[in-house]
Image (cartoon, rainbow, N blue to C red; front, side, top):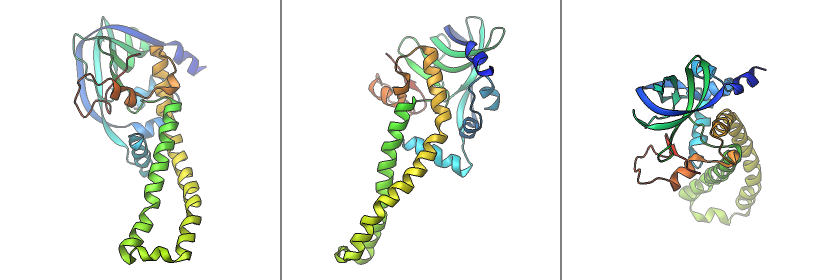
Length: 246
């Protein structure tokens, strides 16, 4: 019932930004999303390839996931809007759409802000991909990282004893037998890390649905942004803020 009420308060606001206040703060977004499955206004108060996703998962398991994000407050044609965004590149006077939830009379929590002119997008931290895109990146990252780590042992052997070590049939057989066991073991770890990040995936799909975008499960903002850079050379573009144009 609570989730239904939360979704009923979902709105897509439209207007011009004014009285913008933005401060860079540190917060634990990873553990917040792992612990709080419900997506609602309480997220504010509580609050690459997939190399970035794997890094986030490892940080989460280590128990140190504090990171920087923008806490923003602004006026949108008489409506008071506030919320956490990974990075807010918009300015006063920009005409935008805001994926938000109403939390009071003329008060809203923003989960994403999109500039109408060019599709520039500020979004809640790590909410960048639908589930199909998320799992596709996770599988790709698992295969590449697992193979790279598996190759470390034979490389060390070569460095110590030379390539002649592989003339030993037992060594070759051992490496061959160990590979499937390693892939299964690393796959289980990768699955757990990927699953821990599902809170961000649900948040992303929730935001995409507010904008009424199509095929939300397949959306990957990092990939889409690379195709829609439009001359933006900042290293933060495609990592902390994005661009989405259907």
